[in-house]
Amino acid sequence: MTQKHLSYSAILVLAANTMNGPGITTLPDVAVDAGILLYIVLIVISVRMASFVCKRMVHAMWSSIKNEYYERVDSVDIDVKSSLKEEEPENCNAESSITVQLTELHTNQIQLEHREHYLHKNDPQSKLLSREDDSTLSLGDAEIKSLIDHEHKSEVSHLQPVLERTSIVGQSLEGYGRSTSTMVALTMVASALCLALAQMMLCAAIMDGLFVVVGGKSCALGLPNTNEEGHTSFVYCTIHSSMKPYMNSGAPVSIISIGWVIATAVSVFLGTKHLDEMMTVQYTFFGCLIVSCMRFTYVLSSMSANFDDLSSSSQSAKSDATDLSWGIGPNPFLTVGPIMFNFAFIVTAPPLSALAKRQSIASDALGMSCVVMGALYAVIGWVGAPVSNAVRNGLIKGGDDTNLLSLILLSGADDGGVSALDLICISAFGISILASIPVYCLLAQQTLVHDAGVAKFPAFVFSNVVPWILVALTYNAAFFEAFVNWSGLLILGYANFSLPLLLDSRLQKVRSEKAVLDDIDLDGSLSKDRRSSSEDIHQSTKITNVFFSLVTASISSVIAISLMPIPSLTVTALVFVVMIFATLLWPDASLDF
Image (cartoon, rainbow, N blue to C red):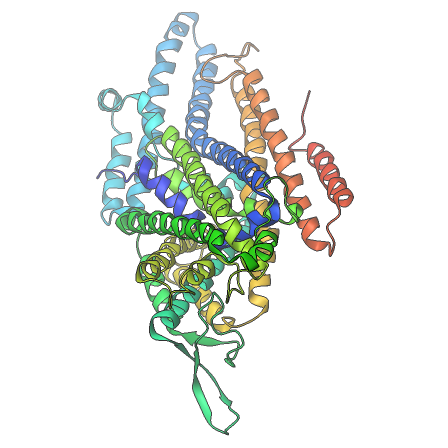
């Protein structure tokens, strides 16, 4: 049976879809606070940071194959050399040929183990095939030689990493042990659910908002409440077409809306599919995102151009309302977090990397997805900033919300309503948001199954159904948005950016130490074959540690800013410097100059 692979374009689209979330709808407002120049600079920095973290994470995953191969060969090689030293001198001439044969044999063993793991997950006949592989390994020398000739050892580079061993949780187990990996597993589940909850709430709100625009209202079921006329009803309706459609509508906190039902049904259905089985849907959703954003860009540009058509009596107000900063905006400190966390998708990248055919495909595709989404973010924020600023200052009639979709709905305020094309594009954008939810839920489900030992069905229910129930219970709650924002800030920041770099640094240290010990021959000399030099590893570790320190200090500074009622540059700089020194002195992330 052929192993499943994700192509370059598939990985790029999946990664881009996971970055498409609620954050993109806030970018026009963020660009106003940051200033256009600073906004672009922050996006470029975030793209570079996310790309580097992805590259190091992919390297840590794929290097595990080579590391496992060398560990197997070294252990057998040392045993063979020890036995040969005890024999007659004339037998020592066979050492080289035996070592080469054992090297090739163990290369093939690793291949068969990885393929057996794949078959166990994907083929009902895997147990039978596995037994056949095991029997093959027990054959005589002639059969083994034939098998080695058929499976050349260069194919090791084309094996896929075993996700359970090479995911972020698996890396923490290799680097730090069981207790730490348990904590990391809980963090991964929490990160995935935080991302999923934010997406789920936005999808349901978009659906309900569209029902209001198209049908005049949207309705939901909730606990009964007695109205002013003394009538009790389970049904609550709203005519407010915003991203919080049921706010101030009299509906209770816990409701089941029409939008919630539709979004839940689609999401749970997609959750039953494997990644490679939903690629047609993922490509479609990505196309919806691109088309809708292109339309949004055109609409926002047209709205900005219409400012020039205002009457002369409104010119003063127009000048004040459209006075947008092109350098540094009025609230630059408040914009670092929202921009950075638009790239908080890295916890979902290991399943994509594990399904790539080669390491370079995974690394390049994930990096390019950051570039593509960074360009999209830059355009949306740049074009939408003037309109958002105008709404803030009351220039646009009826404007009370600077959310991207709310701005698009305002485009038809003077023409009797938003156009049908814009409604279609808003619908397409809402559909595109659904693309990332199955990926987040899959991450949580796989972590529960492989690392917590939970059965598949309970894990599916907990990761795909329970989050939607939480959304229904808190759909109209004022605190839900704050909860998602803060949980994302505290969990996603460190889990997405700091943790992969810390694990990469740790694994480089652990694996290099093993390599040095295993490469020492019986005569005390250090072998230079089959491994990168210690100088190269040391240099790579230093670069990783520098990025780890900068990223962790930046995230800590963002959290400190969020905690302060009035942002202080002095306090922020102090937190940044303290975290730089703290991370540089971290035992497993220290720099040995």
